[in-house]
Structure formats: structure tokens, C-alpha cells
Amino acid sequence: MDTTNNDVTRHYALLGKLIAEDRNSDESTCDLVLESEGKKFPVHKNVMMLVSKYFKKMFTVEMKEKYEGIVKMLQIPHQRLANLIEFIYTGRIIITEDNVINIMDDAEYTELEVLKNICATALLNLVSADNCLKFRACAQRYNLDEVFVKTNQEITNSFAEVVRQDDFVQLDVDDMSAVIKLKDKNLVRKSSVCLGLLVDETLKLAQSPFTGKLLIVGGEESPTYCVVYDVTTRQPTLLPNLNIGRAGATAVKVGSKVYVIGSAAEVDEDGYGDSDSNGNGDDDSDDRDDEDGQGDDEGGLSDDGGGHGDDEVDLSDDEGDLSGDDKDGLSDDEGGDESHSCEMLDLNEPTEWKVLPDMFEHRSYCGSGFIADHIYVTGGQDENEKTLSSCEKFDIHNKMWTKINNMLHAREEHGTVVCNGSLYCLGGYDDESVVLSSCERCDLESGIWNEIAPLNQARGGLACVVLDGNIYAIGGFCEEGQDLATVERLDPKVGMWENITSLKHDHGHLSACVIGNKIFVIGGKTVEVYDPTSNVWATAFEIEKPVSEAAVVAI
Image (cartoon, rainbow, N blue to C red; front, side, top):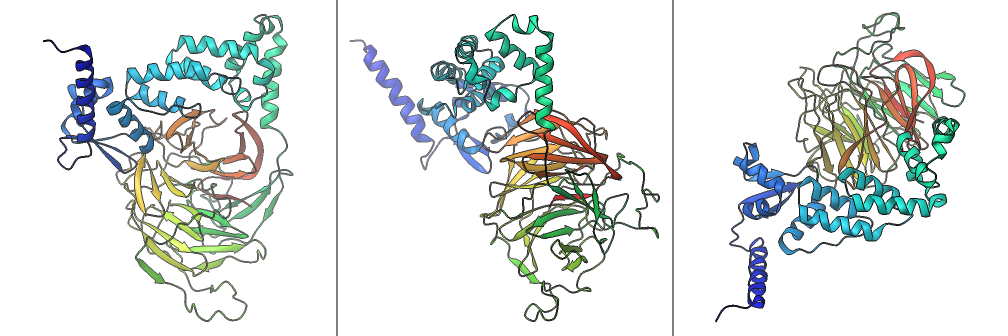
């Protein structure tokens, strides 16, 4: 008697069940590990090759992964990778309006055709006025003709609602014009004024009035110079000079206090840096000096970043006896005058910079970020010009430095930001002067560093900030040493970098900070401002002295 179709179906189901269970058994036959953000997932190489063209090509052509037992999936966050593997083995996955595009991105990346088809069907069923612009962009990206037609129909039917959405404002001019044509194909053709109005309105969003102040500290041209610019009046106000010259230092603002760390610079008798004794040049040279763009600090995130260093030293003179007028517990001769030195200015009493305890190591061109009463300092270059992977943190209350876990890669002239309770380090240069695209994230609770998706373009001497939960990598130098105008943005929830509108001018060793809901970038004498709503850069104003390798914070 022959087996029935039901028998065959049951056998297939049993075989799939046994393979899936084997993944987690003590005697598993898995022969491959997929890794994302430090999480490791054992899988069967043959299973991956059968269902995914991505893995089939990886193990049938001469790629390095063919000879290794581990594959790092840097483009896919670990939870999404776990869901992808679960689908491969069981066919189960939860698809919602919020995650369908992410799942489609992952399916496209791994060339998982079955899942792509499921996502395409889900997109068709989920199209609405609220999501039609995002779904339309996804349909264009992956050539989903049916989804594209369906989203166009929804735009036409709900046009008045769609054009009021933030997604519409963020479209580039070509896409915006295409969407308008869906409502009336003759509208743009009939009126040449229409497209001009769209551009004008978009620019108005970027150039709308803004308020706030930014503080520029040190820099290659004027290493001890400190000046505040009011971004509304564009008027400068001088503050006391730094105790020592600094170019390529890093800075954070915590409450009313501004902390400046590392990167000592020589100063001539007139107070200028050696690169420009007249203090009026605009030197955006290709030499490797750094402004790491420490504009990300918004003055007091409340996540918990402590508790993972085991080498803690009290570096203050007398922590238990803070007498006299020195209420910060700092003395004028407590710190040094080299690149492991730090100083602080209280903006409520801006009479002088107070010297802080020295760091464990000399650090030029390092990065920093503030979270949970600690300033975290990453990498940089030591006194022997060696690029560092080491990191340390400063307790702003106890005035003590503590060593923390090293980064995965040595970096200098990189970007460092704090976002969603984690510390991120981006790009920079390694010890061989190679420009890096690699990025990594430290979970401050565990102290563990993990690689994340690399930048689309390797860049050193960049500026980095955080705005609305997104990380921005701005300008810098490329591998050929040329200045960059390109800008990238990372949504940590998505885990992939996207290119956004470029700066109006290319700059390396530029500086950046966030004021309100806008990003301000300073390079040379030009201050540019970015409005994320319109995705447009505009020139805000010009400053008196050129800026390169300066630290900048919003105050």
C-alpha cells in the first residue's frame, strides 16, 4: 500500500520539527553561528543555504565566511535576526504595520524570497492614509508593483490628509511633485509656479526663527579661546580663556557646567595655535586632527551608566575636606597641563575654568558623552601617538576617574554619542591611519561592546549628534583625505544607516550641537542649520573667527 498525501505532509512536518528542535538540543548538529550585537544563534549551514540565496552565494563562492564558523550579521539587529531564524525553521513570524518594512528589508538583504512574498501581501492588506507614503517608498525600493498601485490609489483618495503628514514634508522635491501629480496630473505641468512654491516652503521650514546659544571652546586657530554665540542675534560673547590650549578636545555640558577634556595644544605668545598665528585662516586641511562633534549632550540623561569598572581611584587632593570658596572640590593646581588634563566652567559663575583631576591616559582627539552622573571618554591618541581602544568615565560628584572596558577597535577622531541608554562610537581612524566605517555600541549596564551596522561611508574627523532618538554622522574626511559634505542618520531601532541631505559645504574637523529641534554645524566661519522635518540644510550665519578642531556645546 502506498503512503497517502496526508502521510507525506505529516512526514514533512515531523522532519521540520526535528530540525528546529535540534538547534537548541544539547547534542545539536548545528555547524554555523550567526551573530548580531553580541548575540549568537546556532543554525544549520545547509538549511540556511536551501532557503536563502544570500547564504547559498556566501558558501559556494570564495567569500571569507565560507571558511569560518561564524557570520556577523551587522545589518540586522539581534531581535530581528532571531525572528528571521524562527521563520526559517518554523514558518512563524508576526507581521504588523510597524514592523513589516523592517521584515521586508531583512528578507531582501538575506534574499529570502518566501518571506518577501509574505511581506508584499501584508503591505497590500495594511495600506492606509497614515502609512501610504512609507509603503509607497518601500514598493519603489523593492519593485512591488501591486503595492505601488495600491498606495497611489490611497494617496489619491486621501490626498488632503496625506499632504499634512510629516512624511510628505520630508519627501524630496521630485517625490513631492510625483505625489501631487497623482491628484491632478496636469497640476504641476500647468503651473511652473507650483514647484517653486514647494521649494520655497521647504526652505522656509529650515530657515524659520530659532533661539538658543552655542559655546565654542578652543580649536586649532585659537586654542584657549571661548566664545558664546546667540543664534538669534548672532552676537558673540567672550568667556574666560581655557587654562591651557586645546585643539581636538571633547566637551559635554551637564546642567550649568561645561567640561572640556584632553587634547592639549601649543599656543604662541599671542594666544594663537601654531597652525595660524594670525588667527584668521580657514584651515580645513586634510591633516589628521579632530573635532569629534560632541553636540550630542542634552545636559542630563537619566539612564544608569555606572558599575562596570573595577579600577577606581580617587584623584582629588582631599575628597573629605572641601573648605573655603572651592565648593566644587577643585583646586587650581590639582590637574596637569597635558592631554590627560580636563577643566570645567560653571556658566552660573563664569569667572574662570577650574582644573579637574587628570585622566588615567593622555588622550588627544578622543570622544565623550554624558549619562547618569558620569562623563564617558573613549579612545583617542596617547602621548606616543598610539591610537587607543581604552575608555574611562568621570564621576562628576566624587571627582573620580574609573577605567571601563575597552572598545572593540582602537579609534581616534571618531564620533561618540549617548543614545537610548547606550554609548556609541562611530568611524574615526585606527592605529594604521586607516579611515573607519565600523561602529560599535556599549551596553552600559553590562559594559559589553558590540559591533553595529557600519557607516555607508568611512569617515574620520566627523561630527556626531543625537536628535529625536536618531544618531547623525556629519562630514569629516574620506579615505582619500578629502573633506566630506555627506551626512548619515541611524535609527537604532532599525539598525541601518541612511544617507540624508548633504551639507551645503564640505568640512572635516567640524563641530556640531543640537539646539531645540535643529542641528547646528560649525566649519570654518560658516554655521549651517539642519531641520529634520524638511530634511534641508541652510546657512544660519557667519562667525568672526574660523573654527576647526573646536569643541562645541549648546548652552
